[in-house]
Structure formats: structure tokens, C-alpha cells
Image (cartoon, rainbow, N blue to C red; front, side, top):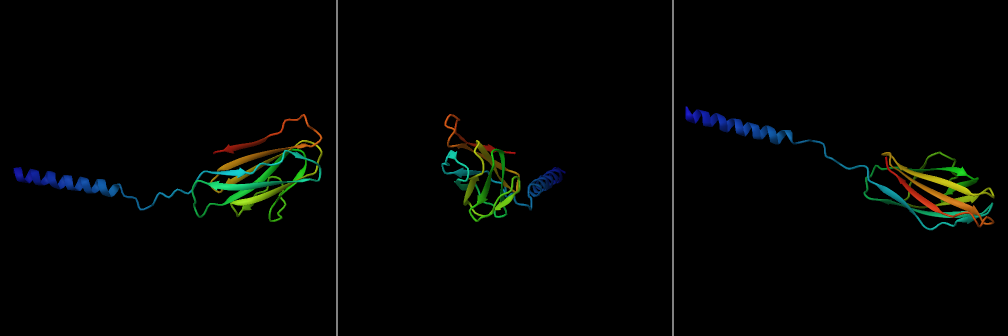
Length: 156
């Protein structure tokens, strides 16, 4: 009787261990797909006159690399008038998304006004992460206006 009880306890223990081990298994691998990123720029001129073009050199810095990550860029101009184009000649329309196919790229902003100008650029990945860059340009004749370039990362 004692052997039968011990045998039953031993069998129950082995079954419990098997259930515990097998339930911990998962056939799907946990692969990180979304990695944080930033966009770094070289210093950009702060003064611009109507008709002049400013070059913005950008580098997309990723903390990890997932093959299916896609990046897009768009811009909005809250102050002033001008045009923004990519180094391949693509002229941007405000708030339209354009694919970023390179990690190092250049943008060219051409002023079309004599006022202070601001452009906000948004670089997004297909996982919903957004990095915002703001560039402020002053008319060269307006020396008393503060000059600044602001980089504000947005995480969602």
C-alpha cells in the first residue's frame, strides 16, 4: 500500500513537471521589430534671404536594425514661404509623406519670402515612432530676432 501511494505521488510529480515545462514553451519567437531612432543634422545656417537655398545634411541613426522597417519624411511650414526638396530632386508638398531610402540624405530649403521662416520636419517609421525637427530661418536684414534650431523627439 505504501509503495502504491509513493508510486502514485511520483507519477503525479513527473506529470506536473511535464505540464509545467511544456506549457512554458511557445512556438513564436519574440523578435523586436521597433527600434528607437533619431535624426541628426549638421549645423544649418540661420539667416536666409528670398531666393537663397539652405542645405540641411541629415543622418538617420537607428538603435537596432529590423529589415522590414520603413521610414518616411514630411514637412509643414507654419511661418514664411519656401520650398523643400530632397537631394534626388523630389520637391516636397506640405504634409505629404515621402519614403526615405537612405540613412544619409540632404534636404534643400529655398526661401520664397522676406519674413522669418520655420519648417517642421517629421521622420516616421512604420511602427508609429516620430522624430520632429524644427528649423528657423531669419531674414538677413532682421538682426534683432533670436535665432535657433530646435530638435524635439516625439515618442508615441
